[in-house]
View (tube, helix red, strand yellow):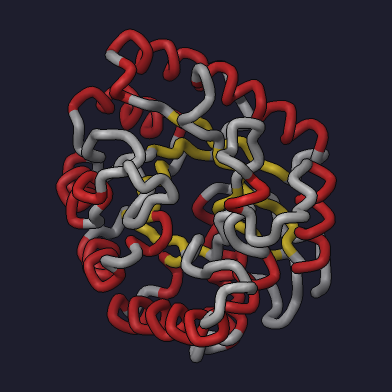
Length: 288
């Protein structure tokens, strides 16, 4: 485990894609340097060593999304780790093609699904080949949970309770509830507590610093995270994430660093848990 108070953290949830919707409007600040180098510079300032770069369902095809992730991994010298996505609403043939493409990606560290943004439940039978692939490759599956940036998203598909059935059916696959299930955080905590193969990340819980109640919303988010961790009694199942460019990396790190938990548990959430879950290399010793 990294020493408490040191850097070398892992952000378990960022997005860097040319298909990101209107970054000037949706980024946490309008002048954000939305590039590999801009993200790496922000990672350095926040003490973040590695980040999972989640590809987007808005890409014309999963193959193009994978290519984008491959390029970010190469140009970042391995600090941005590719996470593929699959959209089952495109049909069984598209799912099979996506799995075949993912099989050829040796650097892949996880798969991300976007229920809510797309009209499907996590336990949709069309996703069976994806979960079988995740089992074969021993890759975690990240699942969008809760609120959507797109007002046309359907929240009924993105409730943590819908992952409970899935986690029971695929006990050998590890799942991550993104955004701590916000606003269903208590529900997410229960699903984590009940299922030994379910984790949660803290990404996307904060608005932009320019929002009028940013400080109060930060305090509220911190309280909600603490409540979830304490309710589960399992800090080893929680991961720090930002959802960059929606949230600043420094804000995501600070949110966890000030949790009323032991220094060891905060350090684990900031990086140690992600390194074990995604089988990542040890910290390079970066300081904050």
